[in-house]
Amino acid sequence: MLNSLLNRFPTFIDIIALITCTGAISLRLWIPELNRKNYKEPYTTISQNLCKLVGVCILLLICSSLVLLAFRAAEMSGSELAGSLAFISPVLFKTHYGSVWIIRTGALLVLCACWWSGKSKESQLKYAIVMFMAACVVAAGRSATGHAADSGDFTTPEFFDWIHIMSASIWAGGLIAITTAVMPALVKRPEQRNKVVSAIALRFTTVALVSVLLILVSGIFNTWYEIGSLQALIDSPYGRFVTAKIIIMMMLIALGATNRYSSIPSLRKWQNKSFITRSGKSYESVKGVRIGKEESDIGTICSGLIRKIRAEALLVLVVVVLTAFLLNQIPPRHLHAPGKIHMTNNFGTVIYGTRNK
Image (cartoon, rainbow, N blue to C red; front, top):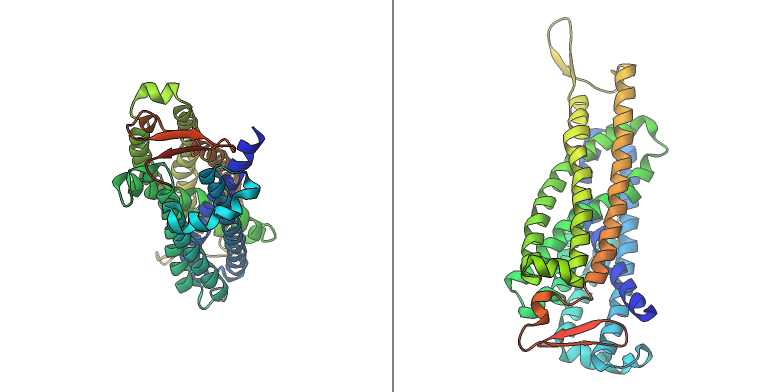
């Protein structure tokens, strides 16, 4: 039992680091919009926080990659973890998993180089684009060594799994990045909090909507491909983990819907509000032109929005925990497939498939 939990922990760290890194990088791609909207001071702090968060995530991804390689070597050799070092070389150079791991490591090195080179404001955007592309490769590595890859490389299931990971990373990782990097930058700037939260929320809600739609489409396909029937969804351990994920996802979508259809319209109306002068000309409401009660109301809306974003981030962590357990279960469709070999190693990890993954 303890070995099984220990095996899932690096998987959890790897997934949470990947989605947070991707979400933070995606924020860095459009967060410069704040700099063009006269929010220079909070923008600088937010940008620095995002840079630090990405750096921590890259470090965690490197560490989890090394640990997962050692675990995979132990799994494939049937040895204890302490004796797995002797089998790392053949795993790296003679297995499919090793080939994917080498490519993933190359993408992580690109991430490191771009992160270090792109810390200055002047070069941040162009390096963020390259970092996002490298994160896409790391995510593809997860798909290429997971359940979806059992049918081969560059297949439809593997593509949908990659879409699922990337969509979840941009949305869920963005929520975590907003909670851990953006919000702390606004604690000491209450006078600018409402403006910055509004600017970010109005932009992020569109990104979230597209991501959720892609998650639903790819999730439905993955569920159909891996499970195959409603009965298997109910009866199998794999299906029960998927069901739990679906329930948490529905909660996440419900919270997101309240933001999009309740909080966001109020923020948009407040941000775009105009007033009419005696000459009849319309001007956009700017700083210094605020009615006390209106400012208080929008402050309440922003506070509620922040609380819901934090709740969403916590639910994301629950989904990642379920995913870490899910990856070590046998999908029902594969369980009785001809030519498949199934066994459980000393770490409680299921090894199956027609090739070494």
